Amino acid sequence: MRTNAQSPRRRRFGTWTRFLTTTAAATAAAVTCTGSGVQPPDGLRPAAAAAPAPYDLEAAQKIREAQCLLGNVLRKGGTEMKAVARAGLKGTEPELLAAAARNYWDGTPLSAAYKKDHAAAYAKFGEMEARNKAWQANLYLHDIPPGYSVAGFQWPPDNPTIFTGTGYAGWIADQFWTGESDFYTDPHPLAGKDSVEAATKIAKARYYPETPANYEDRKEWEWRMAGSTPMYADDARIFLQNGGFPTTAPDLGSMEFRIDVEQLKARFASCATRNPLDPHKVLTAEVAVASQEWQAEIAGQNAQRDIILGAEQAASKDLQIAAQAMAEALGQSMIAGRLTDWEAHFLKVPEGSGRPSPSEFAKARTGIEQAQARATGGSTWLRARPRTRRTRPPR
Image (cartoon, rainbow, N blue to C red; front, side):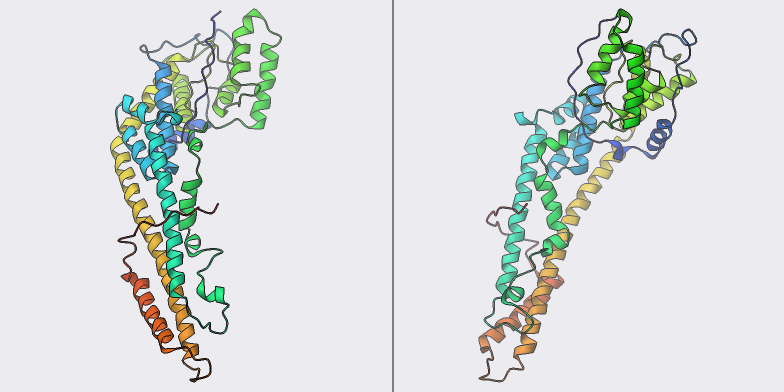
């Protein structure tokens, strides 16, 4: 009986599925619904298919972990974090692993980038606050027209703010309030309740009570699938297909072998990056072939992926500028609308009957003309924004 090594510490990774090619995505969807069937009686299949060549399965798992983590960063990270992830994904294996180092408390490349993104988001809150104050300054007039309260006339909208209404503030807030540890959560899909119950029933029937013959299986079950350990969906699939942990495997190159390989590639596509549980060491060939083919598919996407990521980076920058410009245009339109209401009312008020001073009329007229120009793109704020005092962002 083999002695099973101590269970390695569970790692946490990001999502990679957005970068599958159409073929790989279709394959992943198809093979998820197929399987190698119920385990046939002993003797109808060879004990294990031999691996085509020595292959480091643990190293392959680490590469998948890094790829999934960086894929997750590309999905929800800020500009600086995405730059680190992009460089890592198109670099060498050592560069990939360095970019995806998980000990962020030690000042890793991703951690340094996260701090830069966090500071940039904080600065954006300051910019938004400064724009609200600038808009308010244009609306400070001594007389308030009918239909407005003082706050309703002089203050920009507060709930929601203009920046919130356009979605820009929420976008910045999402980046600001995303905790650094959120990028390192475990992405493995979990087994559903029915699968957990079915797998538990099989385990209780086969591995209890403990005997020398079932010791390795029982230990693997208790350490890796049961108790406080979450049961991963694909581990449950393999366990249920085989009526327990696999003890045999199909011939190398057979149709059953190919089906199992495609299922493992679908597993990797879902960011279930951990090697399958294999206390009897019969899945080595399948995992080795699936790992090599999966990396070949990813390598084949490198050029296209980098083009897509470059376009996404440019589009994200343009979207941010457009969102800021939209908010500015709405702010200036608000100023022009309120000052026009003010002017339309007080021009009708006779002298000596509460009519504002000529300087007030001049201020209102200037404010209207400036707001109209800025609302149509005449503002220089988006092109040259001064550094603003940092303010505490509202949660």
